[in-house]
Length: 67
Length: 223
Image 1 (cartoon, rainbow over the protein chains, first blue to last red):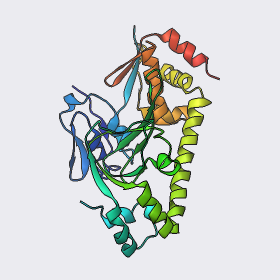
Image 2: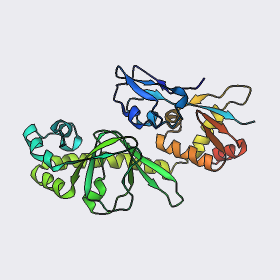
Image 3: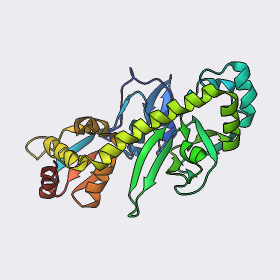
Image 4: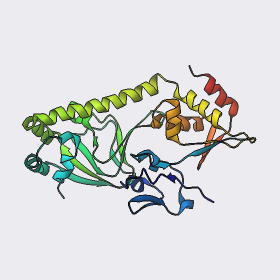
């Protein structure tokens, strides 16, 4: 299953900047809280995390060493 | 559509001006829209207009002769762009690109100077904005010039990597920046540099270390 950016709903203030910069159009505001739709289309550009003024979005990377 | 007085009242440039004063200057602003990815300003070109971001986010960046991009700042609504050439008359020190659809309010150097002459309080506000900008850039210069951030990013990757026996930990770029004691923008560039050197691969939500020995050397080289 595709992974999605993690949203901290308590921190999201509904400013919508993440929706504005999302190049894949996978974010929308629902009741003034950002929500990820169509997770499989997210290409993990991390723009949403970068612009979020409240730190409500986390796009984490798993770090692995190739065999 | 003219700029709203409310937008100006909430902007650090015009803090302290009353509604009648704001109403008297708002006609000096024009409006422009930029689409996602549109270059608003190009480094090295002359400009005599100051931009205020009303909606959207604008990325300020420079590109090295080798083509490497360094983000200097993400300007959010309420922020301003291009003070330096407006006040010193030189070329744009950085390029500006809309990260998404953006609405910008623009004022010419001449009109801004007339506001400064008529409202000395605005001049003090400008000094504060510029001081804040200098503080941010000095911090970035320190990170880029004096600290070997790439070595610390390499160390963080090694310390948090899974090796088959244990799963890799997950970190955001913000978390890596906090651990390395640097700005998020610098971590982003360090990761890109490591990828260009063939030491790591950025794969969707994974950072794959493809040359562990080279990464160790990068980590050990820090001082």
